[in-house]
Each structure stands twice: as C-alpha cells, then as structure tokens.
Image (cartoon, rainbow, N blue to C red; front, top):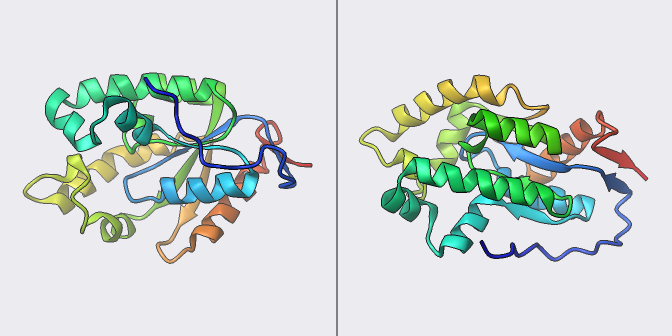
Length: 195
C-alpha cells in the first residue's frame, strides 16, 4: 500500500485544540463523512485521512471497480487493513466507507485506538444526496431507494454503537456539522481538549 497523501496543514497551527486520538467518522453513504471530515481536520489543524481514497490509491482502481473485479469480501479485508494502518499513523480525522463500521473487528479496533463519531442523517436526507450519483456500488440495483432503505435499516443499530453521535438534518452547513462534532468530542477529554 502506498503512503497516504495528507491534506496540507500546519502541525504547529494554534487551533486552540489538542487531539489525543484519531477521530473516525462513521455512517451511511451520503452522511457527509468526507466533507465534514475535511472541515473538522482543518478546524483542529490535523491531517485528514480517507480510507476509501487510500484503498483506491493503493489499488489504482475505483471502489466500484474493486467491487466488480474482486467482490465485496476482498474489499472489506483491504478496508480493515487500511483502517488499522491509518489508526497507527499520526492522529487525525479518518473518514471511512459506509460499511467499514459493520465489522466487529473494525469497531473494536476503532474503539481501542481512536474514537468513533456517527454522522447520523435520516433516510430521506441520504437519498437526496446519493440518488443522482452512480459511484455507489451497493446502489447499482433495479430499485436503489429500496436498497438504500434496507441498508439503512440494517446499519443504523450498528452505527448507534459509535462512541459519539452528531445529527445532520440535511439543511445543516458543513461548518455547523463541524461545530456539532467538536462539541461532541469535547465531552471526551481523553480525545479532544482545549489548549
């Protein structure tokens, strides 16, 4: 696997915060993990990491291409390996794919070495964000809405096991979501503290 390319940031930036553990954003496709993750990393002055982007970079293929060529079980194995490696790197904000948190081993690894934050959004919010995109391999079905609904219903109880939750109502600006995640993280001084 290649080395991940971190977003540019200043490690000595005076952000007013000190991050003690990697923050792992979890949730459904369309929840805003990448956009909120980038904003959160900028706010805290730490690297932004994206497990899907790292997998694509290492494989020189897109996630849909990996699914098509190698299948979902192969992808999930690689995903676990990448998440483990990223948790061991410099502390930062890690955005994960929608299915990453479903594996018991991944949840345990994230809780032991980082902190999980569920970006919680209602089904209709998610559908409005993903319905015009063809980059979601799990939604390449005859009835993508029904597929998304089934995934949502199966996954929400698992996401609810996350260490922290930040609610998105669909109208929430990215900066407001970043504020909500920071507020949740500040309830855990072992994760984030004001300097």
